[in-house]
Length: 85
Image (cartoon, rainbow, N blue to C red; front, top):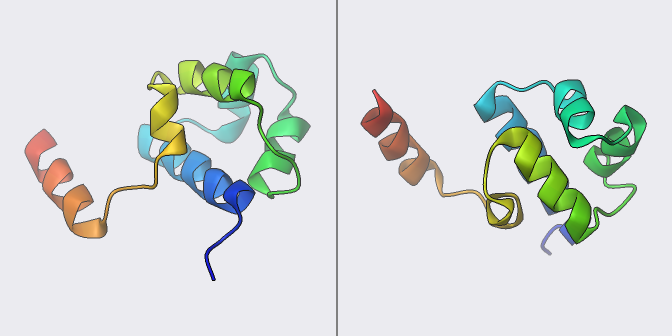
């Protein structure tokens, strides 16, 4: 059975924060949302509105759709990492 949408979004948000090197607290501050609200989203206890997705994406300096897409497969990530070098 697949993960709930909230769980998938939380995992994606966490992954993007780590990849971009932004602590979650920094992203919350830049998005203008309380840290506890972001922690509840990361715990999949609360859903993010589309407006919040936009604010989080702006804080991460990415397109909002990048937070809504499933992450690329590991082989695709490895190729992308090599291409950045």
